[in-house]
Amino acid sequence: MPSRLRGPVAPIVPSPPCKGPCSPKIMQTPEAMQRSSSPDTTGRGSFSSVRENDSGLAQSFTSTKVSSYAEAYEDAVDDTADIPMAGVEFLTPMTRPHSKLLGTWYPHGTFDGRGWKEIRVKGRYASKSFSDLQALHRLTALPPSLPSVETPEEAPNTQKGGSGPSPLSALERLPAEILTSIISLLFVETQTNATTKRNADLRALLLTSQMLHGATIATLYTHITIPHSKIFRKFLSQISARPELGSFVRRLDFSHFNPSTLFSTERERAAAGNLTCDTLLECLELTPNLREFLAQEHIAENLGPKVLEKLFFDMPNLRAIDFCGSWHADFRRSFEALVESPRWPDQLTISRVSFHKTSNLPSSVFETIFPRLDKLTHLDAAGTSVTAKALFSIPLSARITHLNLSKCKRLQAEDVIKFLTTHPAVTDTLQVLSLAADASHYEMLDEDDLIELLPRLPKTLRSLSLKGSKMRSIHIPLVLPLTRQLEELSLGRFITVADVEALLKPDDKLGPHTLRYLDTADLLGAKDIDPMFEPRMSILRPSTAPLCVVEIAERPFQRLKESRRSVDKIGWTLKESGRRYWMVRNAGQIPSEDAYRPWKMGAESWGSRKIPVAVAEVGGMYGWHMFTRKL
Image (tube, rainbow, N blue to C red):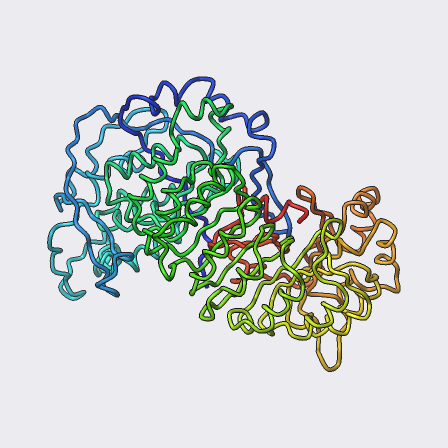
């Protein structure tokens, strides 16, 4: 099962004094520090950091105007001392000796342990483990040749008052890649607005032994989250001084990035020069093993032509890339220049790609990139100008499991149906499919289209959105078999509460339904919701289990808020986030179960509008696109 751990924040390390844009006088002004600690008064109006809340109840979120990662800590190390830089060596993985992705870099040093704690500390947040992390060239010293491992019979008794070898020495005998996997389980992300220091257990491991320190460093640097430009500058300074650290990085995550955290104007940000096209390109050069690059609209202007060329042409290990919500004019011009590049290879290494809400990109971008995605598994093209030509250019060898074509106004129903029912990339692999549309502006599927499409959908589907389609009672017999395989279903317009109830009733031939989430926002108006509470209706009764979340429109939600007792009486709770509204079944009404599913890519809540390209918990701008946007 994929890990559900969210990547750690980039280590906050002191960068060496520098001139110009990265001057500490610019970065640490009292005004900047005041802005960073005032989430209620900062942040662009369009930015909202949304994170899932571990309350135990579905559809629970925490929203802030700035990322919870934005809290700044004081420097803890006296970096004025002259500490020489040691050499490094690469320890190859035992399980795959030729791999450059699973091995570990160890700085040279003495094996007796002296020197890897000789660090002067100061400041309010001083701690040995934190300071050790900031002077890595004095840590994790692995000898050129490890001492021979004693057998349990020959090993001395190192446990006080006990017998047998030390458990720590047995742990250290494990291959580096296995040890790193075990230590990664210790990573625990603090809650939003918490004051607890992050990764305390991992920092404690830095002091345990040199071998464990090396595996711990790999965990700390694997997933790097960048909440604002100051952290990016410090991270870049760290890997520039110690390039071996950059080899650990597998994910660069800008989903929490908010440029207004430290600087209120674009002029101030430009003067600081922390995150620019040049510095981002330098960062990519220093992270050769990067596998996932997660961007969003707040760094779109920094994705210059050279950055895009680096991502698409010069990073052979890159597997996932996300441009969610990027719309900046410079972003469009950079992609137009990329399309004209003569360097395009026949095939790209990327298998998961998201252009979610990149509405200003021309169709030529997709017609150039899609034919080269022969290993494509995840594609989010919602709200883009993708065309039928681009869809059918996807190589036959692709095996798409997640596909989002919602609000793609340049696609015609007949082309989409033909693609879904004939193209080998989707005919027997789809798990998540969204064909949602805003009926007030655009309608993709009419009555005849649904009749043609519904019986031909693959049996592998677990999530289906037909929101905005012209769905009527005649389509219920076609939808009914799908409710025996789907866990998420978004219904179209023009059906009634009785039709919804028919989908949830047990069937002698088909058996019980498997739905956990049902989107009825298109069909239940303020007056139409009353039948849901009538005794003759059973949509919200325990007998409809495992259904636990019903999405409704705003008007009925506001009406229900005025009479919460009627909702509480039948064992449900009202939840809302942004412009979305849910009724959630209370715990204890039905047997509880884990909401985690591999196809949800780390999310715990139901009804995501966006397809993630990395297994991670919901947070930042991605959380806003996934669970607070109406569509």
